[in-house]
View 1 (cartoon, rainbow, N blue to C red):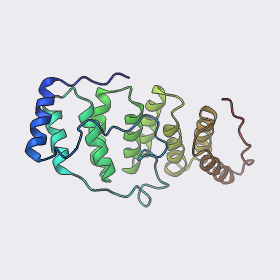
View 2 (cartoon, rainbow, N blue to C red):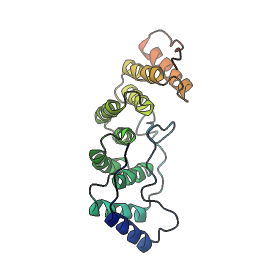
View 3 (spheres, rainbow, N blue to C red):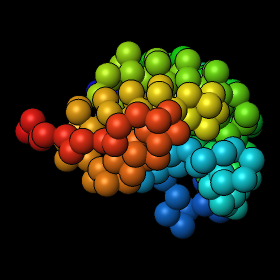
View 4 (cartoon, rainbow, N blue to C red):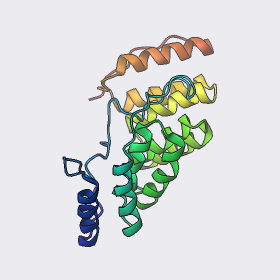
Length: 209
């Protein structure tokens, strides 16, 4: 996917902000965007948003201000709000990350990883229906996106008490991604969900690749 072009004016703003804030020690403004197919990433929800959310990290307000300055001066730049959203997410500030991610996604609507991170922030903010709606947008971009399907299953099972729907998501994940690195974990989750609904145990899936 082609990345949004950064104007010379924007680069000048970034350079000035970095000098002013003393951030020349190696911080790269647009270098932190998550990859599109993370195996383990903050996009994976825990079992329940209240008790098992990822450990909150430190938040660098100086770095965040650099990004806010870029966003104000170059409102069409999708990378600055994406990275600010990632910073807020990693600090455990999920509700604050949501509007920033939404701004980024409006500018970069084909970014499946960004869409899934937005959906997961919604889940951790106690908004499962909106999370599932966002995951559907992710799957409209890439129907086989493993992280989205994994997360969709978690929210269906733990957010909507729908183990049958969760099984569908996780079986779809394994069918589309037969070499998924956490396959055994997903199979265990399917087995647990099947026990909840009283259906037959999972059968090993045949690899198609």
